[in-house]
Length: 189
Image (cartoon, rainbow, N blue to C red; front, side, top):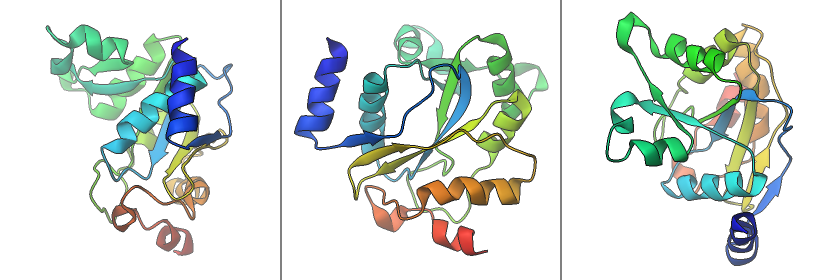
C-alpha cells in the first residue's frame, strides 16, 4: 500500500520517473547520489527508495541515534558512525559493511548543497576498503528523473575510476544548476 502511494505521488503528482534498476542480489554497495544541490533531494530519495523497495541506508554521527530520535533514524535506514578507538571514517564505515549482511549506503560526494570545486572521495575509499561496488544515481531535475547506473567496482586508480563514474552524470541538472559540480570539466581533464 505504501509503495502505491509513493508511486502515485512521485509519478503522477510530481511527474518524476525512475530509469534503471538495482539488482536485489547485490546486498552491499555504495550508492553515489549526485548532484546534491537542494534539501528537496531528501524527499526525492525517500520516494525513490520506497518505490524501488529495497533496503537502503546512510550513516550519521552516533549521537543522533540516542533517545528520543534514535529509533526513528534507525527506522529510516540510518547506521550510527562510531569513531571511537581512533578509527577514521573510512575504516569505521567499512566495518559497518563487514558486520551487516545487507548494507546499501547512499552518500552525496559533494558533501554539501553548495557549489564545490572538488568531490569528497571518502565514498570511493569506503567502497574500495569494503570490497563493494559503487552505483551512480543521478537526481536529474531537468528531466525529472532518478537514473540508476550500473555497478562499478573501484580498481584503486581513483583518477580513472572517477572519470568512469562521472560519465553517468554528464548532462544531469540539479535542482539549483548553478550549484552543480562541474562534471564536464572533470571529464575533460
